Image (cartoon, rainbow, N blue to C red; front, side):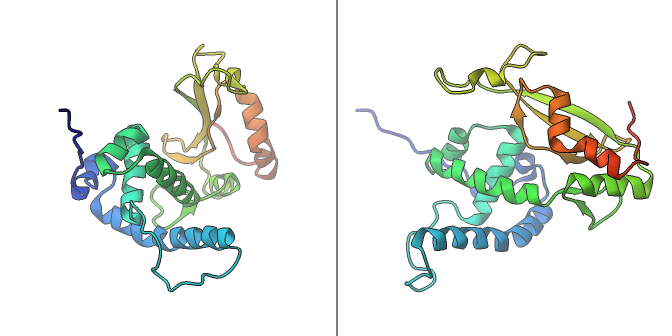
Length: 222
């Protein structure tokens, strides 16, 4: 007789810096900063689904299979190590769909925080305009580059399948434009796009050219 085996890993282990890439102190700060916006997002979604205010007492109803802290941890692990959602689900003792939903929620919240400015504690750049304004004010020379990562081939019959085939790598990829300072420290990155899109097209769509017009003193290095 074959018995199924359930594998779960201690949540404290998964929260270790080797997995998440951040210290426990930094993780605690992220929890404190993002818990409120996440709860507001969830309540807003429920309000829309109900079509009005809640009718039961606060706390009633089904519980999350992954609490907020665990959702943040699995998202950080996924972003750092690119582990498949199915693997993270196995480690966490939940369904893959639960991890997929959690990562989708948390990635947006993390992205909205923007990028920290080197040597300027507390200052964060959340938009491309913020980056150019900072570079012009501080005399920072920017570096622009398109990074490309290989992805699984889209399923047969999926619309727009060819859009992921990179003309450079001849593989299925996703691209993102990264803006860094003269020391290579990331200041901004755009959303991932299909690998077939040319870098010049992406630059135009992202409004980088417009930013150069508004901030003419900003220089770009090699």
